[in-house]
Length: 319
Ligand code: F6P
Image (cartoon, rainbow, N blue to C red; front, side):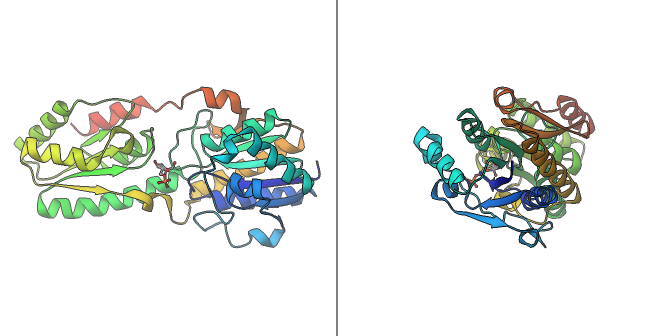
């Protein structure tokens, strides 16, 4: 293999740039040519492809977002779209592709691999919702963004003796909510993986009120439903002065944490090693602090498991 490509796809995540840097530098270290594909699969089909040099990835390890831009493509889901992409890569002499993104992006990578074009997936999403890796790139940074925001909200919640419902991202996964709940000492964490009845949440709030608690923080994962609706119900049921904050896309931005930069560097480099050894159709990940790889087909059929011991702990610590 002499030439490889790299793209970012789906929702951006802090640390994607660090992963791009690792791919480019590791590839050049091994005397490969490396091409950046702009705008995800959309750009791949259009041939928006440029050769990258060592300097192309200078000064980006600390930057959020992705210098290669990102997109979600409907056309690429079709056979015709995938063949168009392969044609473009062949035109540039590219023989393998590294896809940094989430499970939707890996579906595309699997399709290309099945059509004879080897791809390696690097998990980059704030949601931490991918099987076969303990952490995805961007999760730690998003978690720290939430922790910082909730600390600030707690200040005003205390001053005004209010109840807050804070809706966090994560798509269908509750990891961001759970980790933030533990880190912020939230009174209640509501996640899609463990439906907590509305009645028990209200009962807990009332118990707190009876023993003189003046404010409460409820962290709700977006996968459960609307934080605004939940806040309204809480206020109606308890008559507590309640406010809702939907943290939104602030969770996707910002400079990646040290952890995410290191993870991205390790995974990006491993992806290059796999392509060089002639392997395709794999996703790299980290498990028990070891860099691993799994078949993308396997990753896509398995469900990422949330740590229910942590959920129990969060409840035990917020009685
Ligand atoms: O997958 C990352 C994510 O930020 C999810 O947490 C969220 O549900 C979704 O993307 C939002 O997507 P968009 O940026 O298209 O609104």
